[in-house]
Length: 203
Image: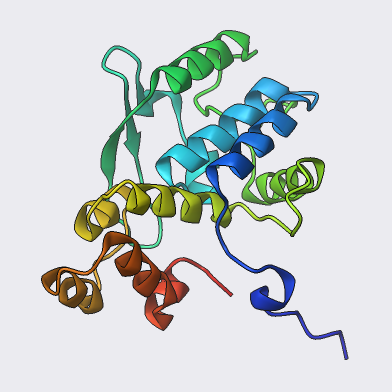
Protein backbone atom coordinates (compact mmCIF):
# COMPACT_ATOMS: atom_id res chain seq x y z
CA UNK A 1 0.00 0.00 0.00
CA UNK A 2 1.30 3.50 -0.77
CA UNK A 3 1.95 5.70 2.28
CA UNK A 4 -1.01 7.73 3.52
CA UNK A 5 -0.95 11.35 2.42
CA UNK A 6 -0.39 13.60 5.42
CA UNK A 7 -3.12 16.05 6.36
CA UNK A 8 -2.33 19.72 5.77
CA UNK A 9 -2.31 20.37 9.52
CA UNK A 10 0.46 17.79 9.91
CA UNK A 11 2.63 19.56 7.34
CA UNK A 12 2.00 23.27 8.02
CA UNK A 13 0.44 25.34 10.76
CA UNK A 14 -1.60 27.56 8.40
CA UNK A 15 -2.88 27.69 4.84
CA UNK A 16 -2.02 31.30 3.99
CA UNK A 17 1.06 33.49 3.69
CA UNK A 18 1.82 36.86 5.25
CA UNK A 19 2.76 39.98 3.29
CA UNK A 20 6.38 39.51 4.35
CA UNK A 21 6.39 35.92 3.11
CA UNK A 22 4.85 36.96 -0.19
CA UNK A 23 7.58 39.57 -0.59
CA UNK A 24 10.22 36.90 0.04
CA UNK A 25 8.62 34.61 -2.55
CA UNK A 26 8.67 37.41 -5.13
CA UNK A 27 12.30 38.21 -4.31
CA UNK A 28 13.22 34.53 -4.67
CA UNK A 29 11.32 34.32 -7.97
CA UNK A 30 13.24 37.32 -9.32
CA UNK A 31 16.46 35.30 -8.97
CA UNK A 32 15.18 32.56 -11.30
CA UNK A 33 16.31 32.23 -14.91
CA UNK A 34 13.04 33.85 -16.01
CA UNK A 35 12.89 35.96 -12.90
CA UNK A 36 10.66 38.78 -14.12
CA UNK A 37 8.02 36.40 -15.46
CA UNK A 38 8.05 34.26 -12.31
CA UNK A 39 7.93 37.24 -9.93
CA UNK A 40 5.04 38.74 -11.92
CA UNK A 41 3.12 35.46 -11.72
CA UNK A 42 3.38 35.39 -7.93
CA UNK A 43 2.47 39.09 -7.67
CA UNK A 44 -0.62 38.83 -9.91
CA UNK A 45 -1.83 35.59 -8.30
CA UNK A 46 -1.57 37.18 -4.85
CA UNK A 47 -3.07 40.56 -5.69
CA UNK A 48 -6.12 39.04 -7.38
CA UNK A 49 -6.59 35.81 -5.41
CA UNK A 50 -6.20 33.66 -8.51
CA UNK A 51 -6.22 29.89 -8.61
CA UNK A 52 -3.38 28.28 -10.58
CA UNK A 53 -5.60 27.53 -13.58
CA UNK A 54 -7.03 31.07 -13.54
CA UNK A 55 -3.53 32.54 -13.52
CA UNK A 56 -2.00 30.49 -16.32
CA UNK A 57 -4.99 31.02 -18.63
CA UNK A 58 -4.82 34.83 -18.35
CA UNK A 59 -4.66 36.45 -21.78
CA UNK A 60 -3.35 39.81 -22.85
CA UNK A 61 -6.82 40.87 -24.01
CA UNK A 62 -7.92 40.65 -20.35
CA UNK A 63 -5.55 43.50 -19.46
CA UNK A 64 -6.77 47.06 -20.01
CA UNK A 65 -3.54 49.01 -19.87
CA UNK A 66 -5.25 52.31 -20.65
CA UNK A 67 -7.52 52.18 -17.61
CA UNK A 68 -5.45 49.92 -15.34
CA UNK A 69 -7.91 47.06 -15.12
CA UNK A 70 -7.84 43.26 -15.28
CA UNK A 71 -10.81 41.19 -16.40
CA UNK A 72 -10.81 38.09 -14.20
CA UNK A 73 -12.54 34.92 -15.37
CA UNK A 74 -13.14 32.55 -12.47
CA UNK A 75 -13.34 28.77 -12.44
CA UNK A 76 -15.41 26.42 -10.24
CA UNK A 77 -18.61 28.39 -10.74
CA UNK A 78 -17.10 31.68 -9.59
CA UNK A 79 -18.34 35.00 -10.93
CA UNK A 80 -16.32 37.11 -13.34
CA UNK A 81 -15.19 40.53 -12.23
CA UNK A 82 -12.99 43.48 -13.15
CA UNK A 83 -10.10 44.28 -10.80
CA UNK A 84 -7.97 47.41 -10.63
CA UNK A 85 -4.28 46.95 -11.45
CA UNK A 86 -1.69 48.69 -9.32
CA UNK A 87 1.11 50.72 -10.89
CA UNK A 88 3.55 48.00 -9.91
CA UNK A 89 1.52 45.38 -11.75
CA UNK A 90 1.08 47.56 -14.84
CA UNK A 91 4.81 48.21 -15.07
CA UNK A 92 5.57 44.50 -14.61
CA UNK A 93 3.03 43.44 -17.25
CA UNK A 94 4.19 46.03 -19.77
CA UNK A 95 7.77 44.86 -19.35
CA UNK A 96 6.72 41.23 -19.70
CA UNK A 97 4.79 42.00 -22.89
CA UNK A 98 7.80 43.78 -24.39
CA UNK A 99 10.03 40.82 -23.56
CA UNK A 100 7.67 38.10 -24.80
CA UNK A 101 8.94 36.57 -28.02
CA UNK A 102 7.07 35.58 -30.01
CA UNK A 103 4.03 37.60 -29.01
CA UNK A 104 1.34 35.18 -27.87
CA UNK A 105 -2.24 35.55 -26.60
CA UNK A 106 -1.36 34.13 -23.16
CA UNK A 107 0.45 36.30 -20.61
CA UNK A 108 2.54 33.64 -18.92
CA UNK A 109 4.33 31.28 -21.28
CA UNK A 110 7.17 28.79 -21.10
CA UNK A 111 10.51 29.13 -22.85
CA UNK A 112 9.04 27.05 -25.69
CA UNK A 113 6.27 29.59 -26.20
CA UNK A 114 3.51 27.38 -24.78
CA UNK A 115 1.11 28.54 -22.07
CA UNK A 116 2.37 27.91 -18.54
CA UNK A 117 0.63 24.96 -16.89
CA UNK A 118 -0.95 24.76 -13.41
CA UNK A 119 1.41 21.87 -12.58
CA UNK A 120 4.40 23.95 -13.63
CA UNK A 121 3.26 26.83 -11.45
CA UNK A 122 2.71 24.52 -8.46
CA UNK A 123 6.23 23.16 -8.79
CA UNK A 124 7.66 26.64 -9.13
CA UNK A 125 5.87 27.93 -6.01
CA UNK A 126 7.01 24.90 -4.01
CA UNK A 127 10.63 25.61 -5.00
CA UNK A 128 10.21 29.30 -4.17
CA UNK A 129 8.95 28.41 -0.70
CA UNK A 130 12.20 26.55 -0.06
CA UNK A 131 14.36 29.29 -1.60
CA UNK A 132 12.55 31.95 0.45
CA UNK A 133 13.01 29.88 3.63
CA UNK A 134 9.32 30.12 4.52
CA UNK A 135 9.70 27.22 6.92
CA UNK A 136 6.90 24.98 5.66
CA UNK A 137 5.74 23.58 2.28
CA UNK A 138 4.12 26.24 0.12
CA UNK A 139 1.49 25.72 -2.60
CA UNK A 140 -0.17 28.20 -4.99
CA UNK A 141 -3.58 28.22 -3.27
CA UNK A 142 -1.90 29.86 -0.29
CA UNK A 143 -1.53 32.97 -2.48
CA UNK A 144 -5.32 33.08 -2.87
CA UNK A 145 -5.79 32.66 0.87
CA UNK A 146 -3.19 35.36 1.53
CA UNK A 147 -5.19 37.74 -0.65
CA UNK A 148 -8.37 36.97 1.32
CA UNK A 149 -6.71 37.46 4.68
CA UNK A 150 -5.10 40.73 3.53
CA UNK A 151 -8.46 42.12 2.40
CA UNK A 152 -10.18 40.96 5.59
CA UNK A 153 -7.49 42.58 7.74
CA UNK A 154 -7.97 45.77 5.74
CA UNK A 155 -11.62 45.79 6.79
CA UNK A 156 -13.23 44.58 3.56
CA UNK A 157 -16.69 43.17 4.31
CA UNK A 158 -17.49 39.56 3.49
CA UNK A 159 -19.75 40.17 0.51
CA UNK A 160 -17.21 42.47 -1.13
CA UNK A 161 -14.53 39.90 -0.39
CA UNK A 162 -16.63 37.16 -1.98
CA UNK A 163 -17.16 39.30 -5.06
CA UNK A 164 -13.45 40.07 -5.37
CA UNK A 165 -12.44 36.41 -5.03
CA UNK A 166 -15.33 35.23 -7.20
CA UNK A 167 -16.57 32.81 -4.54
CA UNK A 168 -20.14 31.51 -4.80
CA UNK A 169 -22.21 32.81 -1.90
CA UNK A 170 -23.12 30.34 0.84
CA UNK A 171 -26.06 30.79 3.30
CA UNK A 172 -23.61 30.77 6.21
CA UNK A 173 -22.02 33.92 4.82
CA UNK A 174 -25.29 35.86 4.91
CA UNK A 175 -25.97 34.82 8.51
CA UNK A 176 -22.57 36.04 9.60
CA UNK A 177 -23.00 39.27 7.64
CA UNK A 178 -26.36 39.97 9.27
CA UNK A 179 -24.87 39.26 12.69
CA UNK A 180 -22.29 41.99 12.12
CA UNK A 181 -19.31 39.68 12.69
CA UNK A 182 -15.77 40.96 12.40
CA UNK A 183 -14.56 40.61 8.74
CA UNK A 184 -11.57 38.50 9.71
CA UNK A 185 -13.74 36.17 11.78
CA UNK A 186 -16.19 35.96 8.89
CA UNK A 187 -13.39 34.92 6.58
CA UNK A 188 -12.10 32.35 9.05
CA UNK A 189 -15.59 30.89 9.34
CA UNK A 190 -15.96 30.83 5.57
CA UNK A 191 -12.66 29.05 5.02
CA UNK A 192 -13.40 26.50 7.75
CA UNK A 193 -16.85 25.53 6.45
CA UNK A 194 -16.69 22.04 4.78
CA UNK A 195 -18.58 23.16 1.66
CA UNK A 196 -16.37 26.18 1.16
CA UNK A 197 -13.20 24.19 1.81
CA UNK A 198 -14.28 21.92 -1.04
CA UNK A 199 -14.92 24.92 -3.29
CA UNK A 200 -11.44 26.25 -2.57
CA UNK A 201 -9.91 22.81 -3.20
CA UNK A 202 -8.51 22.48 0.31
CA UNK A 203 -7.53 18.93 1.25
